[in-house]
Image (cartoon, rainbow, N blue to C red; front, side):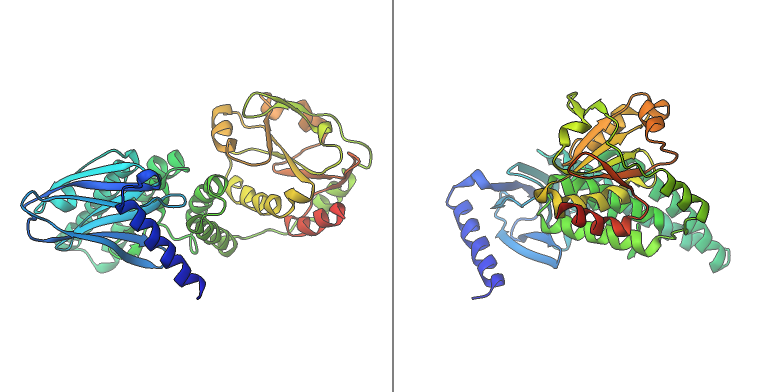
Length: 388
């Protein structure tokens, strides 16, 4: 019996337990679709491999319905569907979501209660539909050449992307609606394309970085992580370091013991660099409110996941001016994150001769700086060597 069959059997058994009123590990979707009596209402799971119908009910005269299904491993997306009309839903726990609508206006005029994520999903769906209708009106009334029309459409889409990114992605990087926004389509074309746009890849990386910390083993999040990494690689344009820069890096490598750093972490607890004696440490000076931060932290995440159990630690010093932004961004990271309120005036930047961000140092188990990091591509090998 293969793994797929076992997985299907497991889902069937858990679904059966939901129906037998063992609801502690199930979510509920219920409500009423006025005017849909006699029709079949479906509950679809929007899985990574495609749309799968997981339950259905034939509506009686009351038009009421209730579905119960196993809670997802992190968050997931579902929809209820009848006569080609749908309501999109986001589920991330054992919540009860209520939907009321009329069959005629089901796509746009439904009311959802019990889930803030579902409410924000509705906002995105309506905005998406609104833009599609706007583009259709532009095409219908255009007297200009096709090239001019395309330019106008592209300009409108760019404005729309910026609005979605600011309101739903950057402001909700740990929310399901941010994930949903990344995969929106306008007339069949992806709104965000991480394989062609560097900025779009950064949007994916921002969400993936935060979600990695909350749901490190979830299949959906690992998939998002892989999309972000691929996008950042495809859109990167690395500039080779100059000989002068390489010489400066080499001259700054210290062979003595570390200079002490003592700063508060996200919980306000003072953390000392020298307390990590006995571990291999990556001392990292960075700023979270920068373009490089999402991709950079994804790379650190991979290193930390690979070597943490072998005695590797990251001591990450933020010099962000916006302490609240740093705290929000760093609170779910698994390594040590501290903040220096002196920002660019930090005495630690001066002590370690940090000229640009990010700058990192490798520290051996004896609490000695052995290398100023010059290449992220070689860092994995050097960490492994120090851990031997």
